[in-house]
Length: 386
Image (cartoon, rainbow, N blue to C red; front, side):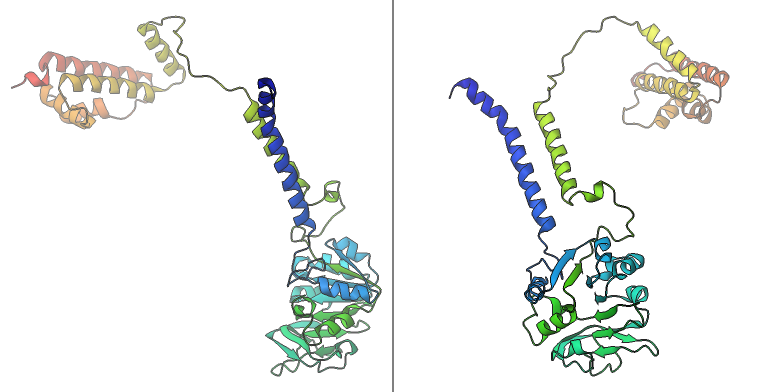
């Protein structure tokens, strides 16, 4: 390989490395976005996922469609399963389940029940354990299954099957079914408080699989709604950005970062600072007059007075041999001792307040000049005093 070829390879190494990183990151983001690793997700094979239930339903002729779009669930005419319904607003949950013939809510709170089934109420929680059905609902007759978790009851004279009741809660259980929809339109409503019967980790225990199949397998089509936490509010009409995949924003951000790094890498760098002589020499008197005109134009009498006092204090400190670390008040005291003036009057001139207008500024300049002349005439240098 020639020197020119080696140089060209070195120049291309960084852009190629950045491109590889962007491609790999985009691939990982896409896999994470579509991998289905969430709780009660029918695409997830984790212990908390529900892929096993979806596969069993598929073998029995039920087509399971996983979605995170409440609008897609609203188009279903069979069974709609909503897990984590608390992530949806009341209006969105009502619209997502309005057209279904059978609605299964997994672990809803009272606000979600008020939106879909006002006749059902929450009734605390119970310890997870295996219990017999204890009710007449046909779907619950698979046998003893995992119960407990969130418990539910019914209000007033609402007729419903309350199943899997703990011994200490006769009027509440972990599964409530309302048929013919006294409380939920024309749909059959099932409220399931123990989500473990749908999770992969517990599906093989007791009659959990049979219970899940009976509750979810009534219709040939089942829409499994897994709400997206990033879209919890009521959704309006879809825009073009809503149609983009969820990992698109991350890819754009990575491309922007890579572009900025490439610009910094290939950008022109500034050299060392070079001293250059001034094109002209400005006399001190002209600088003084120029600054004075700027102060006057800005009406900065306080700034001009501070500049005058600072200059006088420095000259007096050197003349009277006041240590550099001494406070300005020490200079005023030494001036009063040297000139015999009143200490309060000297402090007013050297350390007083700012003048309010140009007339007071001129008067202050005269007083400062008078103090400095008095020190020069009466004291000499402080180190010569015996």
